[in-house]
Figure 1 (cartoon, rainbow, N blue to C red):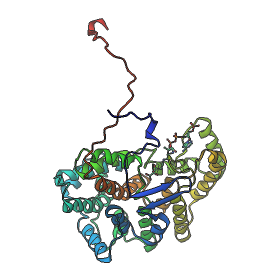
Figure 2 (cartoon, protein in one colour):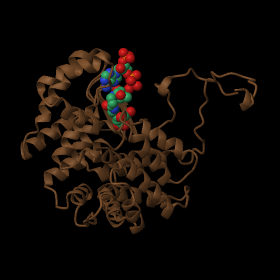
Figure 3 (cartoon, rainbow, N blue to C red):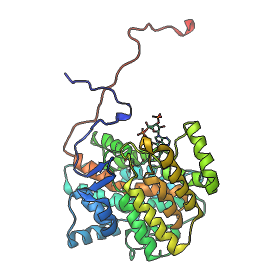
Figure 4 (spheres, protein in one colour):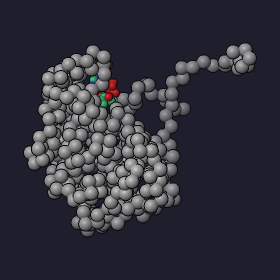
Length: 379
Ligand code: SDX
């Protein structure tokens, strides 16, 4: 007989898996990937090396990394039939919806589920890491008359994405900053989209369906969608002087302030600190952004008013300012989060393979029993 645990809204504090992939200390503001501090990886690693670490559990040798990078470079292009499908999407559609549909569509071409075959697993990892950025950059296919450029095999992972997006080779600093952003967003223990990926994976479906599930979950404004909302919020506020009245209004009507608060962090998200530094590097080189002043004032006042509740800036607060400076449109901010988080989703998918235990929690029933069926004529 299964013992029923106490009901916790949003599963707060309920462990749903055992994992060695990443660790967060929300009181000390610590994030580690396979035991390595995020600050170390942001400063010394690359996104693909970090993805390898997350998925296979150890840093790759030079040969392993070269092969991984080359395999991903080889698989960057997407099927013409997926490009043609994207051309049928409505122009006003959101790129996250386009990404979820195209990620699921990959399963139409590669869906065999040899989940006990290491080659199949590696192939799925390579294909998803390789093709998701191309699908995100190809969102322009939804805008009539656009035929986005193909991947540039001379460029590394981050530079190639910026090339596909802006149709020109990026500045080396811009490419490096973007690569670090991907590392920062790659993994974060049992967040909502990773949990969604694991529930889907537990039914032994294919990894393309797993990623499509997770993309749909990440899209929400309380999760990955917050980064786009933050920029909208900063633009709505418009000046440093209007920050305090805006926040007073949020607090009065209990409106959530985008980019702040976290289920786990009760101090400033360590990723926000690194992103703030990256933003300042971009401003130093490419010119200041007035919204940064508004953001700084916002962070100062939110700390003044909400620090006692453990509400501080999270990963989504400064990321949008970096992406804007990289020439990325705001409706691609969350798809970029997805590009990075595919590494974490696949790491948890691979770690869970072999568990063969479907996620099937229980509920506390609050309805009626033995109710009569009332014929429609009598209702
Ligand atoms: C990400 O889980 C992860 O790891 C996610 C993530 C990852 O890498 O995967 O880190 C990425 O999703 C970051 C979060 C991005 N979302 C936002 O910035 C949206 C704004 N944030 C809030 O919606 C909220 O903070 C959550 C959703 C992030 C966390 O919500 P919780 O843990 O469920 O907290 P809660 O909603 O129960 O709030 C607790 C209290 C409430 O006040 P009281 O009713 O107790 O008086 O804190 C308040 C809330 O009103 N609060 C906020 C707030 N966040 C919490 N008040 C104002 N603004 C906020 N942002």
